[in-house]
Length: 332
Image 1 (cartoon, rainbow, N blue to C red):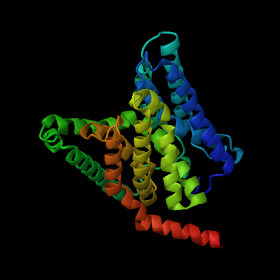
Image 2 (image 1 turned 120 degrees about the horizontal axis):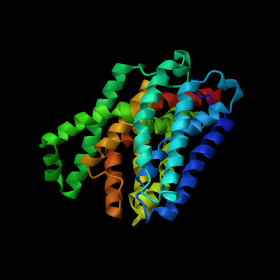
Image 3 (image 1 turned 180 degrees about the horizontal axis):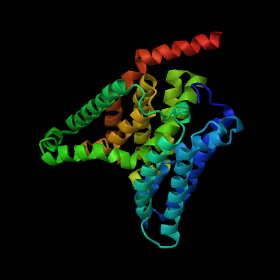
Image 4 (image 1 turned 30 degrees about the vertical axis):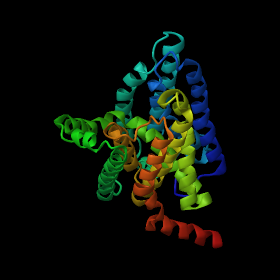
């Protein structure tokens, strides 16, 4: 799929599939969250944006012959099987869901690696999955994100008066061992993070920025991404404070959409933003900027940190350059 080529029909199918699964599973969460852990639902939900993209492209007769069918097929099978086992665990075995989804993630990721190399290289590259694109630039932005992530965490700790606790984390050898192990885990867990990034960055960012311009498009993307988390906010992250949890998630998703979108425009490498997303979730334990938000103070501090660390990228030359290109195209 070349840039700025998402049709209205494909966009509608993407939303129907992505949010259809999210809402449907969210309804099940609403009736079961007081009895079971919702961790499995959170994990499997990360697959939905990717299958939204894949379904939209598979239903396009002109594109179908050009698609990396082996990779898409395994990804769709992994998602549907994971959803099936979640439902089986709840309604048949009456146990906490997610065990089978965890078991499927490792072999599923390995199978996706195999299918990546089994599919035709041209098809893999054509539909946004090329691995070796702008590698040096990608590494710089991955390192930059880790620095920014820790800066945001330190700023939060400073405001909350937890600087000593924050510093103590990095005085422990276990922290660095954990960070090293985290890097090794990506090849065995990437299916989840590619699931979100293939949908949000590769597909929806392109579609919205084409229609609204780069800045408005990325802000709307962040809002949609935040709303998509609603079932998790209501029934997993902070069911005792759903308003603050939802508001916090909107702030975080808009902030990350700005930075992730910046990186994607710079690298055109979906694996780069997938790694960044993976690292972000891994680093969540090294800061107070976690999923759980139960007060207005927490939300305001997150807004302040995002405004200082991530929002300035919205005024970068990259956004400005593309904004001008869109305006010029519209004028023509």
